[in-house]
Image 1 (cartoon, helix red, strand yellow):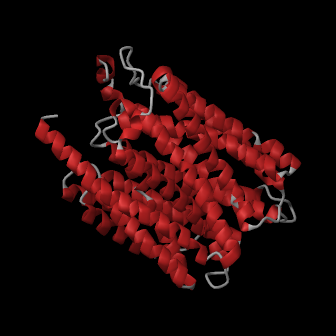
Image 2 (spheres, helix red, strand yellow):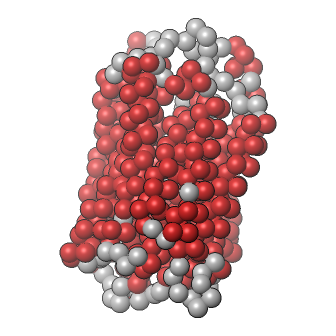
Image 3 (cartoon, helix red, strand yellow):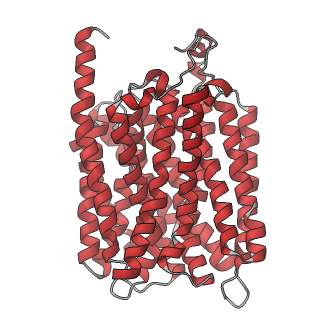
Amino acid sequence: MINKEVKTQSRNYTIPLITITLLFFMWGFITCMNDILIPYLKQLFKLTFFESMLVQFCFFGAYFIGSLIYFLISISKGDPINKAGYKKGIMFGIFLAAFGCILFYPAATFSYYPLFLGALFILGLGFTVLQITANAYVSLLGSEESASSRLNMTQAFNAFGTTIAPVLGGHLIFEFFSAPDGSFSAVATRIPYLIFAGILLLVALLISRVKLPSFQTQEEEIVTGWGALKFSHLKFGVFAMFCYVGGEVAVGSFIISFLEQPQIMGFNEIISKNYLSLYWGGAMIGRFLGAISLNQSLSQSKKAIYMLGAAAAVFLVIFSIVDLSFSQISFFLVFIALNFVAFFIGKSAPARTLSIFAAVNVVLLISAMVNHGELAMYSILGIGIFNSIMFSNIYTLAISGLGKYTSQGSSLVVMAILGGAIVPIFQGYLADQFGVQHSFIIPVFCYLVILIFGAYCTKYLGHVESTEAKSGH
């Protein structure tokens, strides 16, 4: 139940939403830096694919540990966010993430791989708190019906960060702060991550000055116990999120190594980082389109016009960022067109759209595994644009209708980000044994699970809504 004070603040949701969106951008940028660190640290410390994937294992493993601690506290003593408030939770997450970035300085100074992994774990813990608080907070800044659209918009700016990171971050580490002779040196990571820490602290300062509406009330019941687990769609959603994050992170982590393969393109890291940016740039395009497509207040004609304008604008932004010619990225226009078709087939229904996008990614992954050269490259890069709406749609579908268990359910969904730690490790093992190209069979199974979850929610949540309508709720 939201009190009258909160209702009167609803007109001011735009400013809080803009502020939180800035935070989404920053943590998207830093998260995507892992895709730069993996090939860099692999070369620096002479690691196998399996060992290099410990970067993702420690970073995303922190999501599981942090969310598990949060969940255990919530079932024994009540939801911490309900007690402390979303703003304090967000601030704590930012400070913890900034501390993780600062720890890169001693890790680079001593050039010790385990210290890098420790810094990544602390950084991941900070982002865990942000995932639990900020995602749930965005879903509350408006009606439940528009939650997917709203979260897609904030996730679009998160994807903007992931698009810039490979180009800017890759330039900083591979070129600007690298050793004068061009050799790999751990010190190249020191200054960039200190800069990231400084920016995070500036964002924290901004948020501290902005009045964020509170969704807690004095009379609100303290939720204890395992109540969230009584919802079957939440349990399935947790597994789907595990597979989504695992699949997305695994593909992104292997793109540079994939494009280095002689039978694919034979690119070096400096060239490959620009194509990695296209992968994440596709997610940005898709999330902007998703925010428009899933907005129930717009007519189909307005959606089409706005989506065309957004796609053109974002495509031009990506073209201006990456160091590639128009002919080298023009293939993306085909994926944008296919994305349009998929959205309209999905008819603005989050669950149906999720299934369609997952099916497309299964086809693209199989194409990347069986083909060579540009066709294989285009197939793997196209996955990004169809990943676009998956996080927000899985998240909002999983916590839909949880009521007082929303934050508890949110912690369980965020716990499932553990997939980003586990799936790349398995793919790394397969890559060592059978080659990078064949290792993409792991993400294929991930997207098949997401496809089934979307189909399940189309049937289950639709049935729940119709039942509630008949009962007068």
